[in-house]
Image (tube, rainbow, N blue to C red; front, side, top):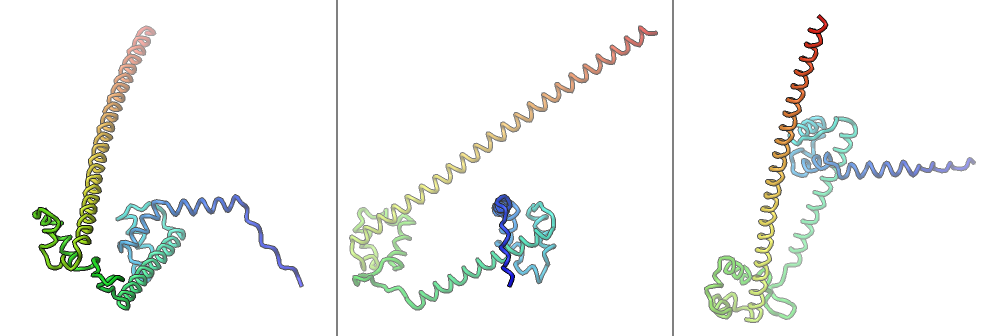
Length: 237
């Protein structure tokens, strides 16, 4: 019986090239365009039985600025990305169904392990957030008066209620911080763009002036050369 042939060893250089090609594709702009179009529904994942791969190619080129050739490589990548999007969608749906099923079979108790009313999801929590969002809590001179303003609040101890007031204040302060940070970033980005635009315009103006001077210089040199040739021709006569 003949001995089985040993598998050929792949050259390390070939493996490196394959890895580089994979990384180039994974982070390429082409892949991002195709993937986003599939995820957003701009391209149907059922394209194989509806519009076909070439129609997908035309959509991506015309509407999304895709720049590549329609080849077997394109259709292969399209199939792979479609499978990826469908699998992710299915997993997400399965996870959501499992979570909803768990909640249906294990409803959250209105009381904690110590037998006290649970704050999370309570009507008191909803009302307190609403009162603090519209500033109603500021009309009271003390947290205790705010606490006594609703029967729902008094289902909890004053200490617990105070703690949730402080927690909500910290949360709102954090949101304000994020909003201010976002606004500052937007302003700095706009300023940077404006500065860059001014620099670009100045550069273009400088280049235009440079070209104008070069053109004038060439024109003068050409005129000078023409005059020189004319004089030489006159002398020969």
